[in-house]
Amino acid sequence: MTPTVPYIQDAFRRFNQRYFDNSLPEIPIRLSNAKGFLGKLTYSRKRSFWRTEQYSDFVLRINTRISLSEAELEDTIIHEMIHLYIAYHRLHDTSSHGVRFRTMMTAINRRDGRHISVTHRLSEAQRREAAGRERGRMVAVVVFEDGRTGVKVVPHRVSAMQGFEAACRRHFRIASLNWYYSRDYFFAQFPCSEAVRVYLMNSDESRTALQTALSASREIILGGKA
Ligand SMILES: [Zn+2]
Image 1 (cartoon, rainbow, N blue to C red):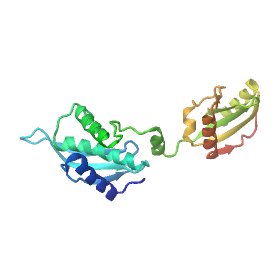
Image 2 (image 1 turned 30 degrees about the horizontal axis):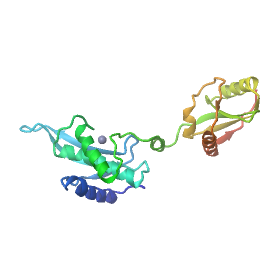
Image 3 (image 1 turned 60 degrees about the vertical axis):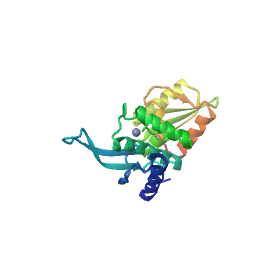
Image 4 (image 1 turned 90 degrees about the vertical axis):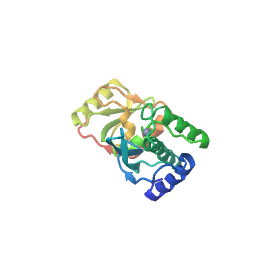
């Protein structure tokens, strides 16, 4: 789901009551399109004359670039609310996700079966989504005479492609070799080089993933075959 400010405000109020005894101030909520985080609490620290530190200008930022389930979105909001609780009440913690943070987090997780975590890191799929379009890669899909299928990512130069194809046909008994230009993240896992190596798709899972990636790729007809 894509969160809206009113939705987040409403969730904030519910969780403020349920988990924080309504002790948190209502703070501005901003939607963010950044790549690096799901949620973020920002504030300024000011040193005043008689107090060690004053925290002010709290802002809660929630990412809208990445699609989260409702539960993931709620967990993200609560994670940031724990930061707010600790900062606003000027409680001491051993680190930014220290003993106090983890104690509160664990209590909330146990109470309502939530999955709040201390990591701000994105899952593989979320990073993929955040990265948007991948850079393009030149991909050879090799089908061997024995029926096996393999993949190789080759530098985006005609000479590299021709060299690889010629060497491949010399080294292996191949039924077909087709070229694709692809921005699919699937191909990011293969090293890009001119080496005569082919990565075999040994499982049904990898073959299905390859088909999915290829369906969104453009086939390239390589002229002047060596
Ligand atoms: Zn955090």
